Length: 564
Image 1: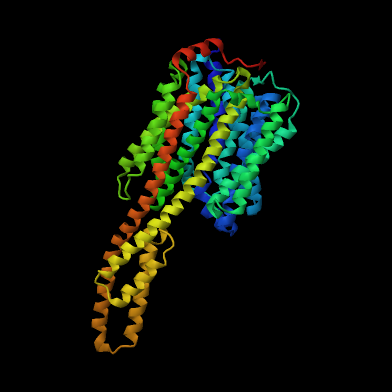
Image 2: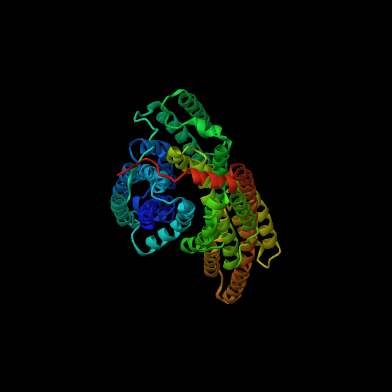
């Protein structure tokens, strides 16, 4: 019988590494402007600071899980932690942007050795009745790390140098290594051969690289570009080769027969939907709050973290999935997530913070009912010794879903924004036409509005408004210099009237722009809601009812090849 003490410390140790690795997927984003200025580089190049991490993380996941099952989960986890800490230090002291990108890729590789190994690593210490709580904990931490990343990054960037977003990993990593060494026992997949499946590893890595890299490039070059199409075709070819090779291999790195279990396959499809839904909320909502509502990244992160609070509150109930079954937990979770995402589309630019928090908490409740039941179902639907590879597939499906989500959502949002920008410009020009401005100022202001290429030029309106007022002041000074003294009073009065009218007009123009941009977001949020409803269908097909759950729990005690 596993004691309370025997499983709590391993869970804490694994959770520290898990949180650290996933936090670094978002903590860097807020500091990118500072990093860009520090290295005097371009926006295109700086994006690789984020992309290199995500690509390395997604590509190495399955290989890392396979090595952990073969050669020891504790061993691979510790190597990952040490490598992550070293890479974090190297990121902080990098003398060039190229070195920073390289070390970020190493961070991503190390994260792939940490994240998918956590659950199977601690399950060997966990009493059967606590499995739901433990798996739910890691689901919660995935959501919290996503939401808190921008907030923590913003606080560090505001009060310290940007390098500290990497140095903060050092004490966390060292503590995790110490706890793992002291409290965690080694475990393996006893059915896994020690022979390395090099061909399978290479083909699946190439397929995942092509897929994730291609999806990341969609936001830059579009779906129809030859680069994206080549990557997607290459990914499909690599996947087909991998399946052919693995189906004939006596010691495959990924037993493809796992997917013959339709429930397991449906669970992974549900995870793809979840990845898209999470990006719809956490990626798009952060963008909406900072650009449309005009709040800081720190404030946006705090607002988004309300979703994680709701997730934590519902977790004790979700943990009952190991007694009551996962079937309706997952379905209700996806439906709640869908409702929350749909309601986000009705948030207006001047919406109160509490209304936004309320909707996000609905999303959080849905998340809390999804993570634990879905992870329990996937682990129970494979042979006991394959818990490691099932956990790895859980993460791969979620990462691919997130990459697909960002690609689709960004393209949709850009398309909708272009359409709404045209309508917004028309409405703003009409307001300028009926204003009390002089014909000369009207024409100049209309020309400026016509040249707007994105919402930031107006919704971040202080610089735009000041620019118009400065130009008006310049015109006034030129006119005063070329006019007789007795005309100065009338000229000053005329320009004062113009300034007052422009200052009064700008909030109206800003509201028109924000309202139309909000409509663009509304369409995309509705798309996310539909995806989550599709996820609910696959969650139902993946679900385990109460009777079958009791049978699974009786048959298993999660004691997988302990080695003391």
